Amino acid sequence: TSDATGKTSELLDDYEEGTFTPTLSYWSGGSGVSYAAQEGQYTKIGNTVFFKLRVNLSSKGSSSGYNVVFQGLPFTPILSTLANPMFQFNAVAGCNLASDSKVPWCQINDGTGKIVVYMFDYGGNGDYDDVIIDHIDDDLSAAVTGHYYV
Image (cartoon, rainbow, N blue to C red):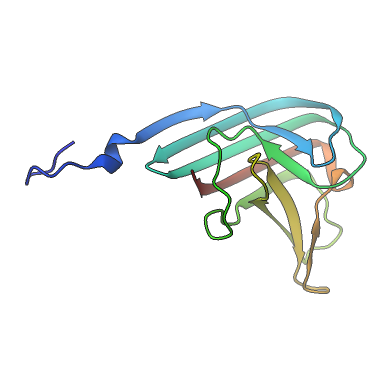
């Protein structure tokens, strides 16, 4: 595309919108997760992907523990502390962190594009901990929004 001066904008030439199907799993693996709904939308502009996903479970399945993760992003993120900011995590129902002072958040931790869920304890020790299968119910309804770089 060109502007009024005839300059070409390569950024807008690399624009894409679409959908994807997110999944919920566990860092250590697991089985039996089933869904009432799975929705994901993205907009890619240049090397930046903006996304939102929603997962409604009908069964959280089983796992030996470790973090709850979301997968299925439409593009593979680059690995960099600055390039992959924390994501907004909203549990509409079915997430119990055992304290009102614990706030969930997410980030990408490896080259697989897994969105890993953690919690930060503002009222306790001021540290973070893993959100694991014991913290969610079979009827979890959760949404994650954010952006990352490719």
